[in-house]
Length: 123
Image (cartoon, rainbow, N blue to C red; front, top):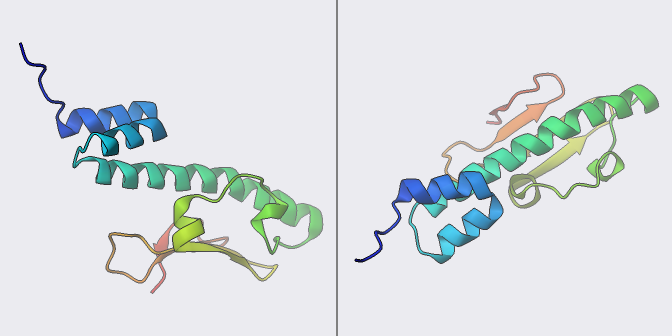
């Protein structure tokens, strides 16, 4: 009896439960669903980083009176893909912004600022 092939849904499920290893496995096995799975992983990685970092930025401002010029002053975590390769962080001391260009977007980019604290179109 032949073993049935895994469906794209099963591949995505494997990614959701095993994280990076699931993404690598799905891609290595040639499942076409791995592209969306990688995007989902990158979105989740970005959200986790932002949710963890914003309180640290606020604490830094409370302590020093301004936002840091570099994220390395508040976190040792590696930047997620979207910020490292497709965007970044900037601050003039009184305000901060995270920005990136989504890979599947026709807009110029997304931005999250200290004022709005949610992703908004940057154009």
